[in-house]
Length: 477
View 1 (cartoon, one colour):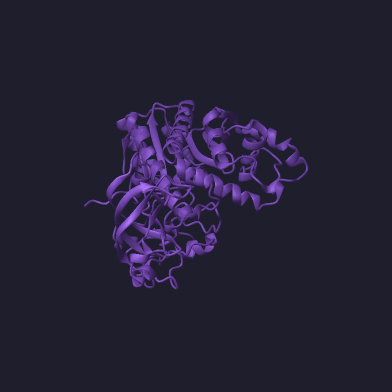
View 2: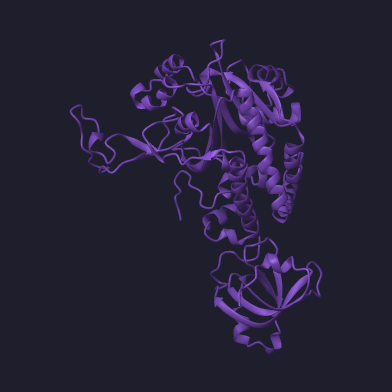
């Protein structure tokens, strides 16, 4: 007999005589009521045991975390809160769970404690909900691009180039760490390394994706990226997933249109398919907000925030205009910002981005035309010589969620920009070839997938929206 998922049993339209359900015990009350969950939904199904006719030894083994197989009948529930319950006819314990040792007991655990038990934390309501939402968002991303004729491209994870020019990369080598071979100058001789040159884990698939966009028209990547940035914050991971579309013949305006449409699509998709999980996460956030001082509480609940993004057109504002707004704001004049905006050219912080979205415009914001000095070399230089065709999308509660630009398609300008930041042109010969042979205007953007999951689930720490977070001094599991 094939077992039925808890979700399907709870959605049943009529009683069923014979059902088989398998799952893990969340709670067991009064030697009679088992709350069983199999991960298909946030909701448990109640299984009612005839305890008088069940051996005491078996009842003793029905503990939180134990895996059970239950045969019985699906009947209308006697208690409040659920339409149906399972009347147990046969019960088999598939795997015991020692209540003295199982860490996920039915009580409130701190997120720190749960991170230390990342292999078991998904058995809690919060993490089960977050990971189901993550899965749905992931599918929605592929569906969005596939429906619109984008080609999915797998860009390399091991690379010899630094797309961001930031230098914060994890090195990949087969050379002995303590005693590498040296060249005549006394430096590490990478010619003897596996790839014959210095290589790293990728920080972005963008440059490779650009080359494919210049043949296939519109492409996207969705894969892991790595930053060796020693940032122990709630917003940074050393290993995370990036979504990066690149589109030939798109200018910055078309790029902004694409990004806005894409992000609204995936959020709407999650809202439609994760209703129970998002309602639960909305309530969790509301309960958490109540613990904060009134002045630190968010003005919007989670579901409200998601609707806010769907119902408002994204306001498009130049960096220069944004700087004027911030410079003249009360928060800046009264020195309430941690980073005071003094002059044009400042790199905006999360507090500035959130001010623009939540206080000033009261809508999602797309900032564009940033100073060239604070942006990457591949962004198209404007005619003023000091700004580039860059754009960032800013969201409530989180700040920047998307970063993108029109790419620099002019060979001479790109060569000069590469020289200015000290990258050897020979390293990027293949990238420059796309400007030598059939160059054209093209644009793209990057979305940090975990930032999106963070926003949609209302979680406050990025380590809680990826199954096994990789952070400084932590590569457990």
